[in-house]
Image (tube, rainbow, N blue to C red; front, side):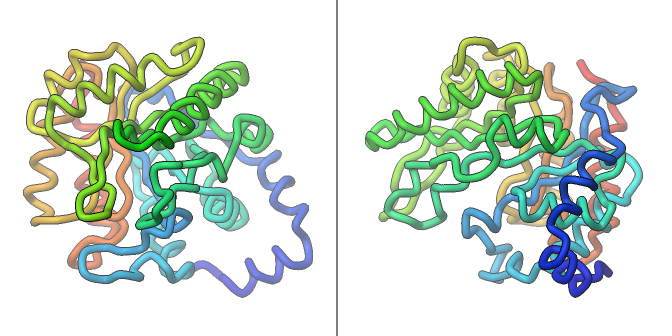
Length: 294
């Protein structure tokens, strides 16, 4: 159980400790022996996306979130974590990022449910902050709504972020979707055709793709999706629904597609139906590290 009171006191009285911890952190590596990565995603709260299944505020309690994250990061085969500055710095101060890959979440301005959700501004990390902290890369969500002019701004900002991360020698992880509003809410099109189209758009962002990775949803025809790109790709877990066994089976099939290099999963592993984070994470690790890259 993380000592949250100690964290609060340290943040209030010694903010310099964050930079000191970052400078002395033992870093992880994107290049694992088997070429696969198992990463935990924890950037949902900064976009106001707190719900897990029927619990609308599941991710709101920071002590609980940190406890689950530390449990996950402590499991063998978990390579790292994605988060916003507040989450990553809590983990940094707790010593949970030593030897782990760390990815900074960049655009969290498209708050869940907001009228401006597609105008997904870069309100988190930028490339300079990622490099300064010694982190491995930055992740950006790119939702493409062909009926919303704000999409153009998101695309332009993402392209600049790809260039800036590449100049710093850091991974640019792009998570694209074709999206549209349904009954006033943003909905992502998870058809194979839509995901393929989003891949082709995302792959061309920026003046170089040398450091670009993709983060893609699991769809029925992952072979067709992966045929659309040569960029390294991680699969996202998505909103947890259905039984865990069905989810794991879908992940396993998708991980066999050429070019897929692992998983980046958040709520499905951090908040499993039975509450056993370690067991859920161990199952995902076995899926990722149990098969080599194709």
